[in-house]
Amino acid sequence: MTLDWTLITVSIVAALVAGGLATLALTYIERRAKAGPVSIFAEQSANTVFLFDGETLVDGTPSARTLLATSQTLGGPWVKVMAYLSPNFPDIEEQLRRLTVEGSITVASTPGLGNPMILQAELRGGMTRLVLLDPEGNAEQPGQDLMALRAMTDELDFLRDTVSKAPILIWRERGNGDVIWANGAYLLRVGDMTEAGQDLTWPLPRLFDRTASTQGMSGQRQKLTLNGGRAAWYDLILVGEGDLRLVFALPADSAVQAETGLRDFMQTLTKTFAHLHVGLAIFDHQRQLQLFNPALLDLTGLPVDFLSMRPSLLSVLDAMRDRKMIPEPKDYRGWRRQMVDMEKAAASGLYEETWSLPGGQTYRVIGRPHPNGAIALMIEDISGEMLRTRRYRADLELGQSVIDQMDEAIAVFSETGQLVMSNAAYAGVWGGDPSTTLDDASLRTLCGQWRTQSAPNPVWNALEDFAANQGDRANWRAEVRLLDGRLVDCRFAPLTGGATLTAFKIRDVAATAKVLLDADTALRRA
Image 1 (cartoon, rainbow, N blue to C red):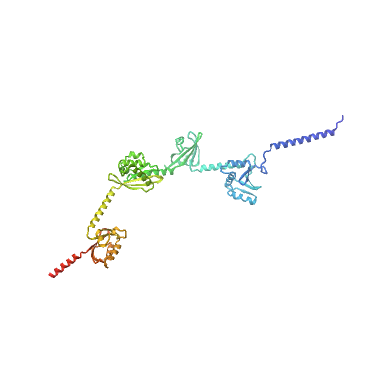
Image 2: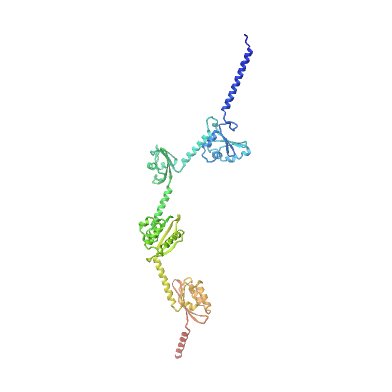
């Protein structure tokens, strides 16, 4: 049997071709099955790449999304990217505006502001494509996410620098009180409390007693005594972290100084109030007694144990009424309404009243508003002042009644030329009492009236000069004739304090004629 080598060769070639085609088909099908969604990026890149449509993120490489995930900035992806780029590219937003004109830009980070970076930006189909590159080329190595790692490293460096420069003391301690970490401010304060040349030990030295942190009370105040005896105050805030504790010590020197100054000021006020003769009672916005002085006890007769219980304003007034230390009202309800009105008036700063008590005393009561709705009630005994006032008024009335009984018309002027008093006889001479009118009752004005009612006479000008002269003055007399023909004898005298006395009396014509007749008769007989 003769073999057909041609047919065998053709069969073998056909089998090989079919096998090759099958292999290619299987390879193509496998690749299509393994291929995922195709990114809109034209090329695959290990760099950090963002694609934005306006401020909306369309796509990004894994390192870009990791960078966004680690950002602590609030806002959308565009805001986070700008916040990340701004420290290295201070004018990044202004640079990106050039894209609308140039289409693409390449910007290098500012030297000295961190690790060097290069930003490539371009417009592709109306979208903004941002590419962050590492100048050293490390980003091309597979398996590395350089930009995300750099972002976390920068943030870690930032946090470390912030904590180290914080002006408050921060430390972490174990449950037994051992300090295992502390910031720079804590270590500096340790140096202020240790001797020169002494090295730090492990665990770190404690500044505060162990009980200060083991009590677990936030806000407790502790004192440190530094080298030289200077004191430093701190408020401790504790945060529990399982078996560990994170402690913050906030400086409280200003608060302590303010509280000490306020306490000293209150003590000074208390000592001052204790020596006042005016009774003082301060009520808060709820009208509860908060402060009173010893004079209030003497003036109201209220017991100290009652006032120490911080009674209300109305309770204090009720107790004063029981002891007859307020004016007795006609009816109790009216009195209560009056007390409520008094409280309202005191709160608005309008209350001031004089109380005439049944026992004969006279009190001046003043209500004044204070900040935060508080009011102060001040009670002063003015019985002596009222007695002197009454006596003074009685003396004035007695003096007035005395000069009213005089025949002479009297007018007294002060040092400034104002009328002080006049008597009833004045109206009989000059036709009216100037002390009862609202017109100007000065010496100059009255001299003008006297001129119009008398014949021309230089005596009025002399009187004005006499009253204006504050030197040595002597009594002098004169006479003037009224327009009706009557003759008036005038007498002018200086008084104490620069005052001036003017006295006028109408001369008796019959008596004068009799005197002249008697004189003439005596001369004839002689």
